[in-house]
Image 1 (tube, rainbow, N blue to C red):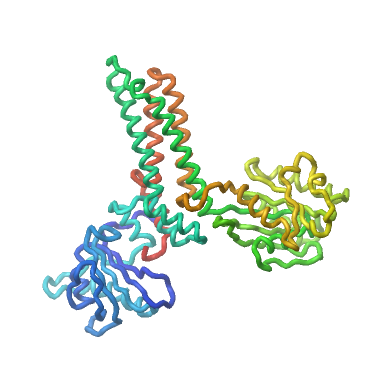
Image 2 (image 1 turned 45 degrees about the horizontal axis):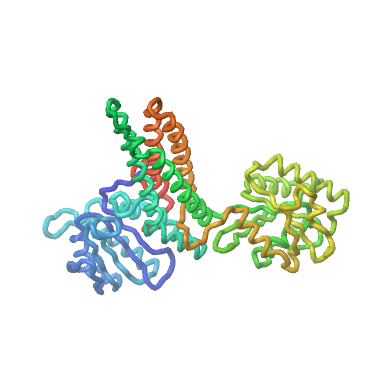
Amino acid sequence: MTLARTTDPIVAIATASGRGAVGIVRVSGARLAPLIEALCGRPLKPREATYLPFRDAAGEPVDHGLAIQFPSPHSFTGEDVFELQAHGGTVVLQLLLARCLEAAAEPDPITGRPRLPGLRVAEPGEFSQRAFLNGKIDLAQAEAIADLIDASTEAAARSAGRSLSGAFSREIHALRDALIHLRMLVEATLDFPEEEIDFLQKADATGQLATLQSQLAAVQQRAKQGALLREGIKVVIAGQPNAGKSSLLNALAGAELAIVSAVAGTTRDVVSQTIQIHGVPLHVVDTAGLRESSDEVEQIGVARAWGQIEGADAVLFLHDLTRAGLPDYAAADAEILRGLQQKLPASVPVLDVWNKQDAAPMADASSAAGADRADRGIALSAKTGLGIEALREQLLAMAGWQAVPEGVYLARARHVQALSQVEIHLALAAGHLAAQAQLLDLLAEELRLAQNALNEITGEFGADDLLGVIFSRFCIGK
């Protein structure tokens, strides 16, 4: 979606589709008084809910409910806003929406011109977009609105609320202000090279830059935790047939999601489930057993399993303790390990999980794993639940979760990427600063680029296409 026509008045149903006790139709624009008169039969007092009938063209009530007017600039969008809070039936709300569009096009009894020229149905996210464009919220706060609506855990909802209140934006603004001050010192040195006073040395520019880098690192850490809380990670369970992969998925999910059978090759397709561990979403995927097979359907399942593995953020390599000592089984595990090493980047962790401890209580998982992998192995029983909690904690560690949820604000992958760009530019700036006079032009440029990357987060200098992509993913009425 490109940036919408920002001067048009807009209207939309602002509540979720379906039946409900209350539904809201929202209008935003300029000079809404004639439209309010047409639907309510009289003017409204600002910010005061008034119970009255909402009238059709013949003056008959479509519904009775609350009407509220929020005059500009004291509204969510910064424009005049008019809300009809009616009964939440689908037909009723559609009738009110149609009536708003109809009344806007009708001639005003006094002027003879349309009551509200150009009124149209809002595009997805357009109300929030206008709030951003009119300076009511910044871009990070606008994204937090969508994140709060989409939050799948209590921790994610609370963190999105902190972002919406401006916690993340305030940290970005603090970084930006410190960066602007440092840029001022560099520009002063460039503008007055003949002066005896060395602005950079006297103002301890090196110390200021080091402090800025330290503050950035702290913000990066919290942003990464916030992005993890929002996005979660994809965890794929891989291993030979009958290692207990489906049982492990069921144990982690706390429900019988996958068919469990002693028959090898029962799982032919991908089964996935999102679980929550301390509020962090983990998307766990059960796959077909990895082995050579002449069965065409099983071959497809194995191919899909490898496809899931290649897109994983982490892999649980499941082993069967009751067969770990068998030469053929160990050789097949070694072949799978070689495949994992070839297909996965080094950044994707692979955790060895030794299942069926209940059936082989005396088995030594670490010796079966080998000394080089013993420190990464977890022995458990998917059947009895023994060791499942330890695996949950290990999964959180693999995901990189460290922060306490109450101290985290929700962030997005683009925020993390922007902060990484700031880190790179500040590191280059530090190198140029060490060389001082010879590279001051380059130092100034790196600081400028770092500030631009920060501005992308809050939207001070956001490109139109970026804004369009962000707001197009909102729901209608927001």
